[in-house]
Image (tube, rainbow, N blue to C red; front, side, top):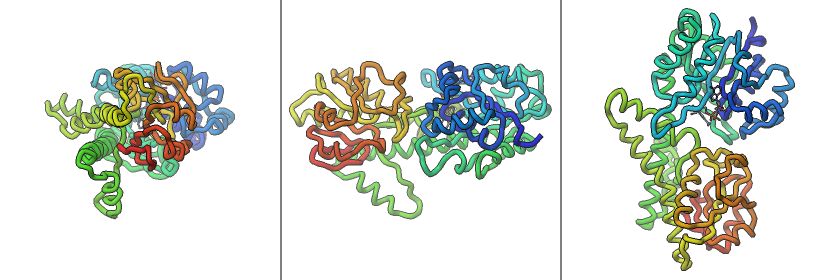
Length: 422
Ligand SMILES: NC(=O)c1ccc[n+]([C@@H]2O[C@H](COP(=O)([O-])OP(=O)(O)OC[C@H]3O[C@@H](n4cnc5c(N)ncnc54)[C@H](O)[C@@H]3O)[C@@H](O)[C@H]2O)c1
């Protein structure tokens, strides 16, 4: 069988799974896109993409190729050569919630046949592939991993909205439970991406992803805390960060902001600290500290906003606050775990009337009780104060620069008489 006719099943058609599915179609695979979410499957069948980096044109081309089947029916997975699991791995009350991996592994196992390869892509703690995924696949199929079928782990590195680094040109770390598994996993991704980076085991690959995100989380926490102290000390931290970034070696630029969001930074490091506590009984102090600082940034933004209003003789209570950009990241519509949500809660508790400006957020995810307004001079002028939370490219920042009302810029994107930087 050539790669042109191989059958790939991508379990989970979300922000990670859909791009993998589209790329696999492009590479000549016959692809089944499995998801349990009716709305997502119906949307995909109608050619509607909700993932920023996948255009509806790409999706429609995949559908028209006859090699992409979005479905809820696991029976369509029967006879697959490769299955990639890209289901959510959230935290439930601070603890890793692996039920999505468990459910999908059970469903998939019924359709696992000899010679097939199963790859986990969901972000998770080291050991998940061997300790959790394999037993479920073996139980459900009656087959033995390493003998009858192949298993590996490959972390996702998708960076939504990044126009330079996409799924195809970002190197992909690959691993297998043994040499034969690694060979299959690597061969699959060699068909999809420009460069694969093999590591010796699945635990190492699992840890790679957590290291990458913990590194980012900790460094963002560092500059966030620096921003708080810099403000109190009367030092322009943004200027120091810019200056430090001129160093061509040994420094990497991170910038402060209103907090961290999305599916990765607020969640992944805690998978690592949970595992360290569970297995070693120890506290991963860097992670705990970074969580503490980053989690409190929205509270700090609210506090700065109060000071800003106070200067104008106003209280937050009863004030109309316009939040510009609600998604967690520039140029995406993803509002999951966005710091704007915590900011909205804090401001609401203090009696503010909250208006949101962000056309990218999916309507069904729009935060309850937040009025939606377009990005116009009128919207800005109607506020008692504005917070620039997320600086999407479509926002004409001149409107903020000329704002008649105070603006708290959490991104250091605007200068002007009414602008106060974080
Ligand atoms: N979004 C990112 O930028 C990103 C980047 C790197 C890694 N990850 C990781 O990838 C994984 C998936 O994240 P995502 O952002 O794509 O999540 P998502 O919520 O966008 O998509 C996951 C999809 O899986 C589906 N699903 C849940 N249970 C299922 C089941 N039993 N069978 C079939 N489908 C099922 C859901 O309905 C959903 O559509 C997570 O572990 C996440 O941490 C995400």
